[in-house]
Amino acid sequence: MESPPSLSSVLDDETENQEELAMLKELYKVRCTLRGDALVKFDFLMDSLKEKDESIEELEYHLNDKERRFNLLRQELKTERCISQGLKQQIETYELDKVKDLETIERAQLLTQELNASKEELEVAHASLTRDLDHLERANKLVKDELKKLGENHDLLQETYKKTLGSMNDPIIDKNIASSSTSFTSEHAKLVAEHVRLQEELSLHVETNTYLESLVTKYGLNYHPNESACEQATILEENVRLKKELAKFTTTKNKMGLDDLLSKQRSNNQKHGLGYTLKSYKKNFYKKEKPAQEKNKKVTNVGNASKGKATSGDRTGPNNHYELFVDYYGDVYANYVGPRNGYAYRGYSI
Image (tube, rainbow, N blue to C red; front, side, top):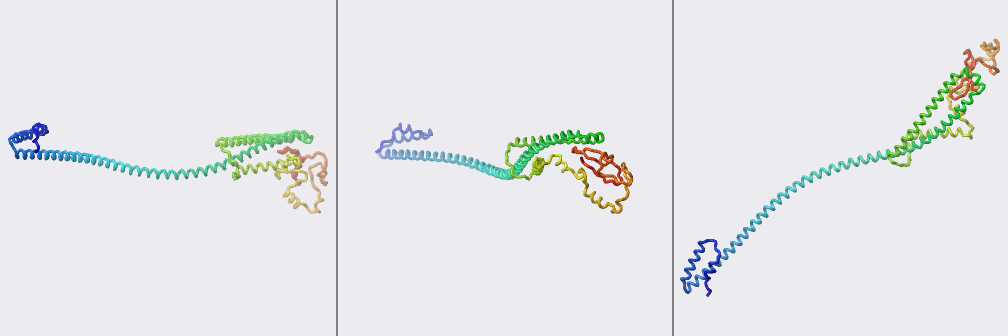
């Protein structure tokens, strides 16, 4: 038989209520009065009660633990809900950012297309500028050659001008210098004006050359020309070709001086010489020729010849019907100044 619980063990049990403690004291007093089987049964009931109390406490502990876990789970659920709400907001923000990013990508693609188009235009413009630079380099080279040729021609014209001034001491010109002084002055003024014009043209070519060199230096490009579509370059090339032909005609091999070349470049109105007659005048002259029976008729002349006798065209001595003049190129020629009474007008160069 098991011994009954001592009073100290009963008193040591923790109770939450003073009424339970008082009830335990009463039960202890009742136990003290019992003997035999009644005491054993009473102890058994007390032990069973204690076990039940322990079971109840354990169940309460588990219940409290369940409640604690439930509270924890509920708290976690609230946290998860907050997290879910935050994730939803983040998803919405992400969707908005995605739309904005798509719009940005579309704008970037459009901008890329525009930049590609601009790049193509720039490439075309760059190619055009490259061709222009090639033409400018060719033009620059041609301008340099033209400048050199102009300088040589200028020196040659100065020498020719000096030689022309030196040839003005001819006795025939000195004899008639009084009548041609006005014409010589005007021709001299024309030569001075031509000299000034050549100097201006020379300075213009120098400025053009300097400008072309500044363009090449400014853009820092160095291309080799391969085309000649530029109009200015074509004109300059033609000019250089003509200058080369001029230099070829002025060589000693062809035995042609500058005066002869310039005389060949004069117009028909400036061509004079002994026996020279324009084609139109020759035709008119032959058409107006009188028949053979009328050739022996008397002709009235203003000169010193007597009536009924024709004056000889190749007689020696001065002829008052002609005066000496100097043309633009320094050539001396005789011009008819007599009466217009049937004589053929001719200018003879000397």
